[in-house]
Image 1 (cartoon, rainbow, N blue to C red):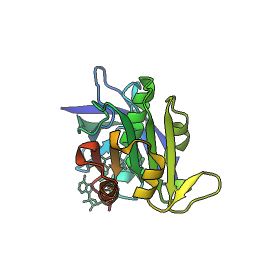
Image 2 (image 1 turned 90 degrees about the horizontal axis):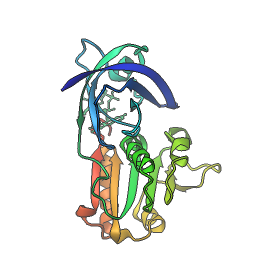
Image 3 (image 1 turned 45 degrees about the vertical axis):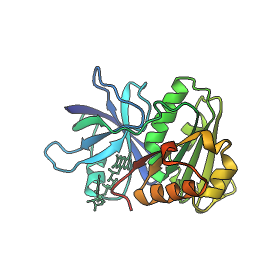
Length: 229
Ligand SMILES: Cc1cc2nc3c(=O)[nH]c(=O)nc-3n(C[C@H](O)[C@H](O)[C@H](O)COP(=O)(O)OP(=O)(O)OC[C@H]3O[C@@H](n4cnc5c(N)ncnc54)[C@H](O)[C@@H]3O)c2cc1C
């Protein structure tokens, strides 16, 4: 069903990523990890899927877009408070629903959006499980939601940063997310469920690293951000 969402505000997350908040229609609900199709222009044909980047418990809807200079990004940037956009959804089945044991989230860049939504919901539910986030970025500037993730009220939660260009301020592994890092940071690999989100090449690379660790397909859930190479 198509909905009209009222734009509230834009929040700068990094030099290359902005969040866009909209008022939440009455009776609208979604599952953390899902996305919507968003048309930022009233009469335009530009449409992209964007994942919810905050939890379903909030009274607003938030989406976070990596800024690429595309026509789509420009139309998001031209939104003014009170403007309306058309949206369809919620869509998608990426979620942490039904996971019995430990959860390992693996995000590549802007692939953090559905994972942040899932983690915000788990924090809201006071989840006590062991949860690890392995978060890969090119450099420090690209880490969206760094403070918000660190402040999540989760009892048994660790964040592992992986940066192609590491810096002294932040303890981080250098390079790309790989089997060695996953083995070093995750206890009880065999009883973990892995939620992987990011550009298709990153998701594929992480899946093959997990295969070398003996992780089965049944332990893996993926969200591929088509449109990014
Ligand atoms: C389920 C899902 C959730 C997503 N969530 C987010 C999110 O939260 N934040 C975010 O920044 N991005 C997200 N994306 C990616 C986003 O929808 C865009 O595809 C991407 O941002 C590229 O759009 P652009 O405006 O930057 O560039 P564009 O110039 O519009 O697109 C770049 C290239 O990718 C192609 N392309 C664009 N979208 C798609 C598509 N959906 N499928 C196949 N090809 C495509 C275009 O034809 C073009 O060749 C998600 C994608 C999917 C499938």
